[in-house]
Length: 229
Image: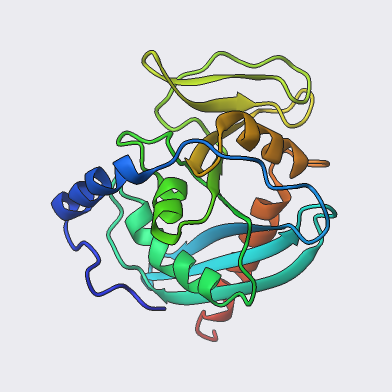
């Protein structure tokens, strides 16, 4: 795994980098065409804190069928300490490495995490999007520090995810009667379009197929690096 030479080493430098990149986020754009050949990537990471090791996975799905067409992993040392609001600096080097090992370029990347739903409006999905230029969105399992009213009980019902009066994402019901997921724009996609993508990726489960498959793959990659008992 390659860590960029100019990667921030301190919290102050990381926050300054977030402030520099935030104005570059484009919070609008189309949904990729839902047809064979459109490629949606899911990325996720897993950690072994005792060994200070991180594993990232990138899984490429055909948007029309949700079949896996390619996948890759990257394993290396954790690049940044755990600090609230700066998680992208821990995860991004490994994620970039895993994406670079794919032979095809995704039309959209879905992150297990946040985009504009971030204190400085630059979560992992937005940071990744600005860094690569790719359309991105974040789909998280919990609302972080933001507030929301429970959405309706039916699949597709949603309510705004709020930071004070500002809408930073949506709480979206992907399965009837099941806890919602929390989505936010990353880069080069609008919130309505991100909602449509999230529903397309959740035909059978609460979490999107991108996240489910990338989560399994990065855990396998991490386990494969563990020393023999």
